[in-house]
Length: 249
Ligand SMILES: [Zn+2]
Image 1 (tube, protein in one colour):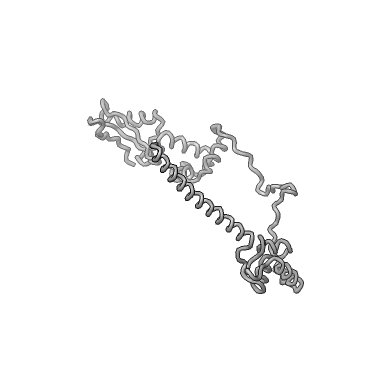
Image 2 (cartoon, rainbow, N blue to C red):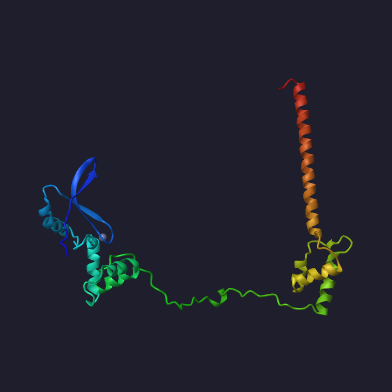
């Protein structure tokens, strides 16, 4: 294998031309430079790798196998826990394990006994089959589905009688503030039954009397308001007239 040859390169920095030797990590791409001033080509072949090595770089036999201090450290750790079956461990393995398996770092740290940097303590894991026990009285009430009952003759009779008492067949509306719901609640039957019986035998739900009374009351108040407003403006006109007559402005 041909010996690796270190060649200087010219870079432009701050408007100046610099001759440097460069190294780049074959794994993460981080790079570093060393000035090539006072360092001839022959000398560079021994000085440059020593220089980068002293900085923590793993200088490879090829550019591709150069590793920055961080990646070099990482690969050392990986080798420390992998039985020396494959030695040297191929770079792809180090690369893949360290970067594509997040769980790897923890395993590695554990195996090499590395002290974890103190972090906030993880909350204690609860067993997955942990059952939250509610006090009996706090258990949510099960949703009770309306039983798909059929109206019996007795149901019909009772509902009819009740509707007869609270429905105004002339005005075609409920009396007072009765509603289907109120009838259903009172008799303990599904509202749908009441609705069906009312539609069949009486008439539309309409506005019950209570609601009609309320609306009428609101209308009355509104009318009173309008009346009051017109009386106020009439009064104001009168006041203005009197002011004019007595010479007030
Ligand atoms: Zn690197």
